[in-house]
Length: 361
Image (cartoon, rainbow, N blue to C red; front, side):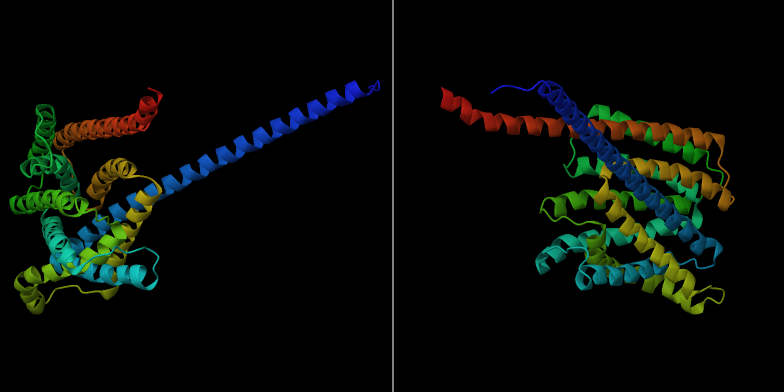
């Protein structure tokens, strides 16, 4: 068949139109991808900002209630939190079924959840009691010791292997915290003892979770943790409450009991746990660790101004040294996990290729 003189220009025009359409499609795809990345970034920063605000808010609010407000009963305050969180977690998991629960047998609950609940009760009791005696800024600085204590407990329970390099890193953290403690202007020995006992119990709790829950493949998020652990925690807290705080509550005349304040404080504590669920669900635990570093610095300076707790230069330099050591430790742990993940992926790929090679032979 013959082609007419106009076929060539029409073909060229058609190809040009097709190319222009493909270019428009590519631009639209790139625009959608860019908008998707932007939306993800906005969501991530929103969750991070929400968690930092709520986490700092709970700590500052607890400090206010236990000291300035006139309710110096940390066990009672913690029990209010646990009761409130238990009820709301039950509604979310069992009634509304927004969050899926875990298949938990009675034996598993008694053998694995109750020990964790007992340790958590001790951690909250001692940790909140420390706020009565120590400044928020100083407590945040001393909490930089947590990786060090967790590592030592992990080595003792054979969850971690002893490494000289890691131990040197832990010593650096301890030295920084020791300098910060020496520079504390309002040091209180009993409050410091409570704080250290709380950190030690928290380290044991973290390792216990690895031994009891992770080994049994029981995975709890922040909401299901409240559902299962909060009632046990409440029950264990009744012991120090009955013997230590109830007699004082019954005889004290100057206790400021305001239901609105206590309820709003418990609501903020529950909202914090929900924000943890959202943050880890939408981002990662690493993002939360990085956000925690930012939160600590914000808390140190804000609490210093709010509660008139001055920070000495020596204390700040000591914490800065410990902070740098903690950052280095977190970085090395991240690189180790990254290397282990890459090695696991390589081994999996190698395993998939093996049958092909043997078949070819």
